[in-house]
Amino acid sequence: MNTADPRTQARLAVERAPHDAMAWIMLCEYELDAGDARAGENAARRALSLRPGHPEALARLGRAQWMQGQRNDAVASLRSAAANAPRHPGIAVWLGHVLEDVGEAEAAADAYAQAHVIAPDEPQIAAYLLAWRRKLCDWRDLDALALQVRTAVRHGRAMVEPFAFLSEDSTAAEQLQCARLRASALAQAIRPLPPAAPRARTDGIRAGFLSNGFGAHPTGLLTVALFEALQASEGIAAHLFALNPDDGSLVRQRLRAATQLHDVAGLPHAQVARRIREAGIDVLFDLRGWGGGGAPEVLAMRPAPVQVNWLAYPGTSGAPWIDYVLADGFVLPDALAPHFSERVVRLPRCFQPSDSARAIPPAPPRRECGLPERTGDGGVVFCCFNNSYKLNPCSMERALAVLRAVPGSVLWLLAGPGHADERLRGFAQAQGVDPQRLVFMSKQPHAEYLARLQHADLFLDTGPYNAHTTASDALWAGCPVLTRPGDTFAARVAGSLNHHLGLEAMNVDSDEAFVARAVDLGRDPEALAALRAEVARRRNGSGLFDMSGFARDFVEAVRLMAPP
Image 1 (cartoon, rainbow, N blue to C red):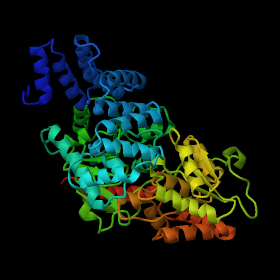
Image 2 (image 1 turned 90 degrees about the vertical axis):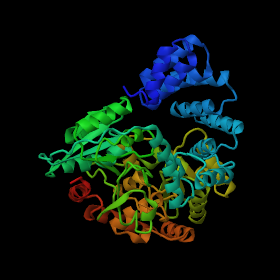
Image 3 (image 1 turned 135 degrees about the vertical axis):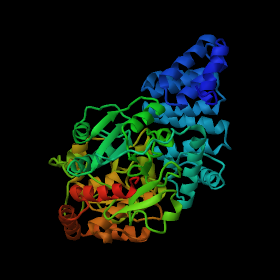
Image 4 (image 1 turned 120 degrees about the vertical axis):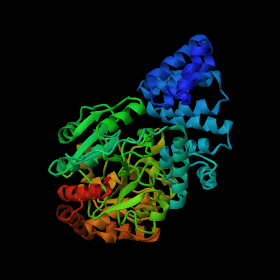
């Protein structure tokens, strides 16, 4: 037994003092940090048996319940904790997290705002409030919060979530700093596994993939056809390590049929790492990164000799346990490479695969979608199905300028959480646009979503965080994507898709050019129809959706990165 390990020390402490509630609370903290939610729950309940109503114990109990998917129980525990400690900012933050998950969006915002009132100078709390206000399209104090967070990151004073930081108007250097701060804190708390003995690769290279998205999730939808194509590749065996339980979806069934799928949902981090090590993985791909719901703690344990950042997190990991990032020459040009902690390996095509086997059902009638009928002088449908946190004031002002210049057009958006849609309509009205020209689509099953996409004439992208999976979906459905590539990875993904589709004219270099191009197309039905036909032709003939070709390139990249 390693008595230097804090978790072990905490276990010894409760053995020595079994009636000390604080000892049980500290043990709970270490169990939860290790990913062992059941052990953490048991420790929290022991603490509560000794100190009923103790807010710290209730808060950790809520966290343990949240980790086990017991969302409503977690809300109840954390609400009790907050009531018993109304001036505790950390408890308010955790309450906000679980309220997000149960769909109480506005209440979550109130919890984060309360935490910020209690601790206004704490940039990590400001970052939580900022990120959630972006999701709710609640842009009050946006510039002040963003300045507080960016300044703290720049000076190394805050460990904020790197994924949320991608939505800020930050530089690639700031994104690297943000990721390094987060990785450094994790590295100090995680003990790596002992180095593994070199494996004799008599059966070829074993490539592992770690994600919480192996199902009807953007990651599963993007990768399933690639994994099917990899089945025909010699010398590569794909192992999926699924952090999410089986959702019963067709995508999960296809993934299971195409790979060796290991269900590691709910296991402590150390057990997941050992499963990867026992499988003899040579190259491990992190398909979640800092995106939330993943397991960076597992990667920090170094279960594989080579570990790669790819696909789901559009930026640098900043982590010493990640060796490579897999990208392409457009999305990660040479000028960006110094701001990545990883060595860069580039595919000759867009780094983002897609499910080229999916069919597109017939489109429902426009009226069922809330869209106007097409007429000779109106009915153009601009769309942006990006998540609401990407719809910042600058991107919306740009889109609304297009609506003002194209009579009868509408902007079709994905419905957001809480009162986000109402706020966007209020913003449109303030910009001189009839709020009813904003049409919202509730979340649909993927096939129905693709069917509706056929009614969209032009996708108006956002910045600094582009459309990624949504841009690929739009192009697959025949809808052209207009984007303004930026200076970071997250701001260049839609541009990469256009570039590799051969539609460079849809990548513009300024907001003025963006508006002018959209207006010209919106006012010229023949030009718009010709562009849509060009998208359809290139979709079928370019390498963007060629998953057999992608698989060949991917295998070469894996061989390049694999240990000798």
